[in-house]
Image 1 (cartoon, one colour):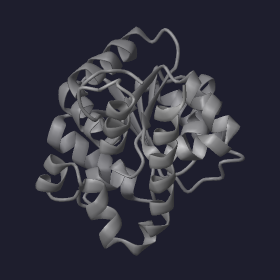
Image 2 (tube, one colour):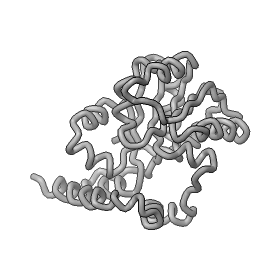
Image 3 (cartoon, one colour):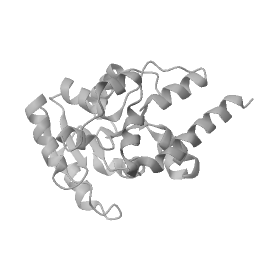
Image 4 (cartoon, one colour):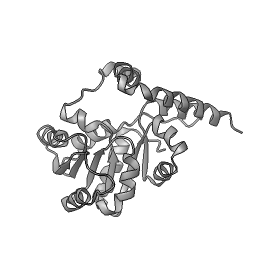
Length: 229
């Protein structure tokens, strides 16, 4: 995992988006993905193949401290996306994901708020087993940045198709397009400052309660790693 802050991660993405030498997958790693990778060999290989891995969430910062490899700050997918839209409006951006209409509205917001160069958008409700039409649309757009909010499994999908996508920097951003579009609101700023945004979101949304066992498993995994010789 890269020991970088948000500004450094943003600069890295801008630099590689401009170079366009090869496709680079950016993984915003969180405890859930770590736990899933223990049972999913393809996901584990995807993480290892990523060009940049950043700590998405306080759980990763806690783990880094436990393992005596402290990180400067968390770099969430949503924060990285907003930072890039704000500081690199000249880069060509494609938005992929969420339910129909959300990516389109997010594109309108990005253009109005940041002057972003949005070259395309598509919802995430397409057949992941037959994605050729969507992949061709993204490749034809000549985007330099791809923000993809495809939910669980997005990293594997993006890594599998990164060469065909033809985008220099590809970032899985989870539900960030919903936030950009205004479909979903972020937790209050004070929860982010205290590092309990995840608790706020999970506690108020029963649909997320199934994630709690994964967080417990992550804590156990960190402690096991810490105690290993």
